[in-house]
Length: 140
Figure 1: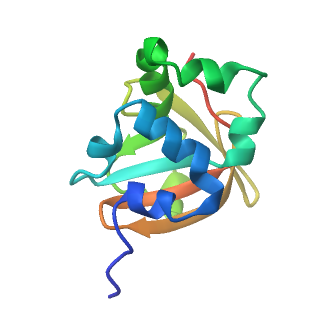
Figure 2 (figure 1 turned 90 degrees about the horizontal axis):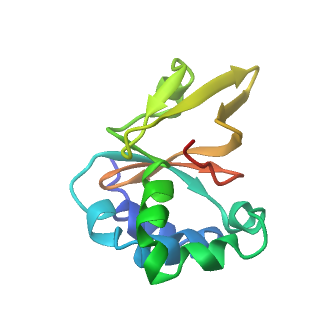
């Protein structure tokens, strides 16, 4: 079995589509956590997903005084344990690391986490798995 490329943070940092996510993880102080033992399942929004947020939202979240809010949003994209795509489709909700539950809906071959569509699945990391999503999901 091939050893995955590195931690979730390493894998995300090596992918040009996750520059905003990596910057946000650094700003939130979550690099160490997401580089930890895990396993974690991360629903990773792409740079395009972050670009869909209302103007100024991301810049505001990256400010040090908004770190708690940024942490709450980012941890809403993380589920404890290794949840593969085959497991995700069997769920109605996924309890996130921030404590809130995200809705999971499956329609044909389309899987959604809240309002985000999963666009790529099962990207392996040494401490978990990444599923790519097209929208930043926000806890209620």
